[in-house]
Image 1 (cartoon, one colour):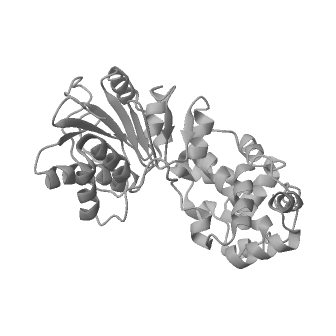
Image 2 (image 1 turned 60 degrees about the vertical axis):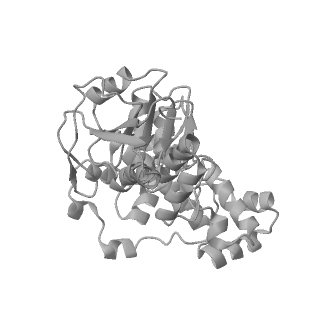
Image 3 (image 1 turned 180 degrees about the horizontal axis):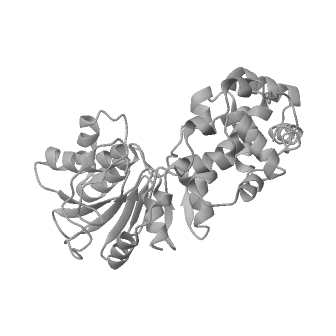
Length: 354
């Protein structure tokens, strides 16, 4: 628990540029509502930036802070890093050193959304189980292979609290409120927020496929899980069919009926989505990204990527870095329309469609 021997519990939120407003608000509002429904000041909070100046969040709003990192001791029981867009590009040695100075046994260090990236960069998650927003899972695992990074909604491992973005901070802080102040207060907060239930740290971030297509199609869900687990070395359709106990034709019909895809295309887009995350969130060479996502060569990967996203991977990375204008990078609609059709039946091992 945070600040188990002191009341009110004092929490600092370290805001980085382009932090996620919904994740930040979810955390703050849970604490505010705990105070409101209890009729007591259970929690206090302050906002911090590297230089004490206001910070712009990802939706363009600018939020004032209470102080900067020049204040070494704010009397905090916990400090949470609020991350958001492009945190992998953030150069914040001042913030990293400030966070390291607070690494002690009586202090909780945590993160919401992509804030885990900064804690990992500060080597403050070594030896702890943690999580990060699902869009950043692949790149974080590549960047910090020594860490155990789970796909769960949130992780509480001793004095490290990490959670995904969106509304996940509500669940993590509700878990804290329930542990420290009782289930009744947590229940009343949930009612105020019109939350159907408080999710726990065993809940996954993304909606399971079984919830989207119904639990009546376990074979399809199993096939997709196998695809997701075998990105670097893609399985063939025959191998997938064998593992799930269906014929090749039966599996094709399931994909077409419930996902409106042929299996080859679905698998290809899974791999390209993973490749795009690595492309935009890491500095990995394109050839390494291609191999990590199951493509037989960098040129083959580039062709598949361009056919799908209408821009070569090299230009995608340059555009994200502000080195290329959108209108000069994209392939014309007509050119994309005339590209070879990849929505065809082909092996899944990277020999044809990727």
